[in-house]
Image (cartoon, rainbow, N blue to C red; front, side, top):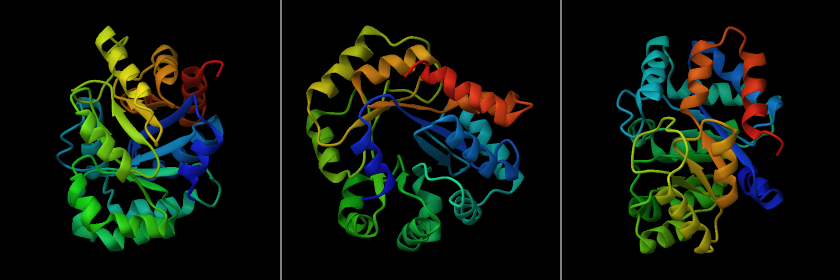
Length: 259
């Protein structure tokens, strides 16, 4: 049982996963940000693997990818940084990115190196589920690496249940069929979608992402799922911060409110 599975075993609500791009805003900020997130009370740290064509991401995260790549961030460097983070941080760590850099690294080698570095899970939005089940699931299960798939309001119940069976950790419920970014309050249609997921009694918990930007949207998401994932709002904070440690603490405590 890895750290992600232990977390969900110990806590079923108000779980906050925070995403940021490795190598942004500066190349050497990755470790500092992870340590600050853990200290502030983030439940999961989600480190983005910068990629030149992040198709699911909006302008904010796209820009962070471009800056991180220009800064010189590489996949191998991220694994080295996770090793450093693990010296002081016990919070679950997920790497999120696209499948192309992982394939270039070598899927099996990357999975093993990631676990050795201290990574608990992966989110690769463009990894086909059937391909994962056929070629990688046995390896991931054996070495204790969780793999998270995304679902959206247009995902059929049949596919959601297939994803649930192939998952060992949690499911990423995208709040809308759109790119990442803050969007204000959830619509009635979105709330109905969250309720539908909740009523399916899936074996895995789900976290809601895309559009989580403040304590209100975090609280609403936590009423339906086990919590939420915040990305663009945090990237904006990092971009504009002059004191990362202080601002990260304020951001996390503000988002979680009294929970």
